[in-house]
Image (cartoon, rainbow, N blue to C red; front, side):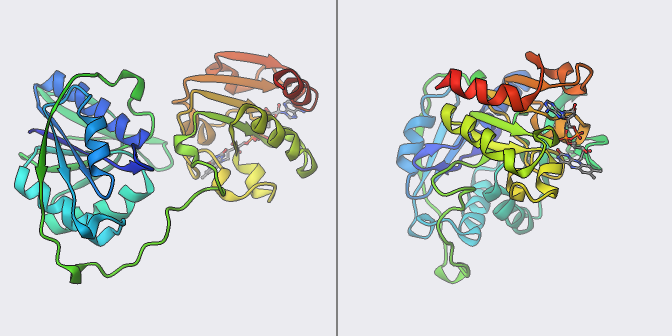
Length: 321
Ligand SMILES: Cc1cc2nc3c(=O)[nH]c(=O)nc-3n(C[C@H](O)[C@H](O)[C@H](O)COP(=O)(O)OP(=O)(O)OC[C@H]3O[C@@H](n4cnc5c(N)ncnc54)[C@H](O)[C@@H]3O)c2cc1C
């Protein structure tokens, strides 16, 4: 295969960021005539392979190994490095996740191959793909063209591709194995990190209620929390809300926070500074409430309401109840 997509397990299902990477592989594969394969590993490898085999790719590789039952950067790094060596793809694609940031640099170091992290898009030059990534707080975009035959490791930013465009099909499933020496596993991993007990991390949330400085004061935060609860959304914010200590830092969206791509991003009292916009512009539907009709975020809005969030949030919550 030419492109290998490495899946991440999200409680027995394919992580949405991996689905985005598969979508990217399908699009790049069909544009540059490259075949696509998918690697499923870990304790849920069989279930993930079954799901992956329903996509339009050439084949799915299933990898089970006692040292991969619990995630460790050592084990996953060793396994992916061996699979890449054996299969020799041109490109290895990953979704944009904490786990990928943790272990893929090890794969890169083991293989002495480059890791192009957080690509946001691709273009074509000389019949080959060129990958773009944002640098210097998203002020500049740099274009990177691999100049040898690969393998090149590439992770894609959230929303670089939409998982809704994933193509269905049917793929062959092949079982593979790797040798992992128990001595290489030097770390002990705790249960997966959750942003909030029982919650989901923002990068894979489908509905987000996000508040900005327009919420006024800490005492008003429960208004937004209730609205989020009523529609089953996650709560997020702009940076001033975090800087004021009204919400914990992991709620922050933007260039120094998280990047999200929900189906609905409800922006309440957020002006639309570029540092915020880069973190949420991939959202499918953006609803903006702001008392200033000239707030820049209205330019991105699918729906906009000019009004006071302190009046609108309670009424919206009541109506949605
Ligand atoms: C290096 C760097 C990194 C940064 N990283 C981030 C980042 O990751 N994320 C981020 O968000 N910012 C980031 N910032 C800050 C960013 O530049 C903006 O200052 C910030 O996004 C503004 O947040 P805001 O829209 O909530 O506040 P403001 O810009 O103050 O906007 C508040 C908005 O609320 C509206 N409003 C006020 N009261 C009401 C009301 N009662 N009802 C309705 N609307 C109301 C106002 O009209 C205004 O549009 C960064 C800045 C720098 C320099």
